[in-house]
Image (cartoon, rainbow, N blue to C red; front, side, top):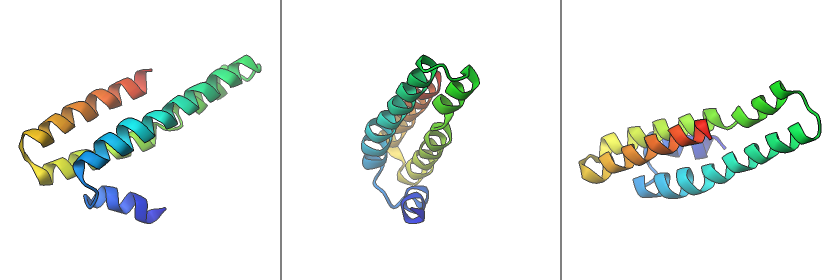
Length: 98
């Protein structure tokens, strides 16, 4: 597990892989799963605070991926890195709000 996080934070994962696979696909699926779990918790009569906590649980992971992408793109440079930063920032904004 530590190896997974270290590779992303150190920039050893390619920028495109970090953006499209790790962030857009995998993290989006994680966010949807936790969103669904929060809805199910509400439907089962759980307190709203518990549902909100469940919904917000993946936010630290999302912020970690965003930070790792920014670190990696700073090393890469160029237009592709700037585009990746924009996409990652929009994705993070949507992941937190939705």
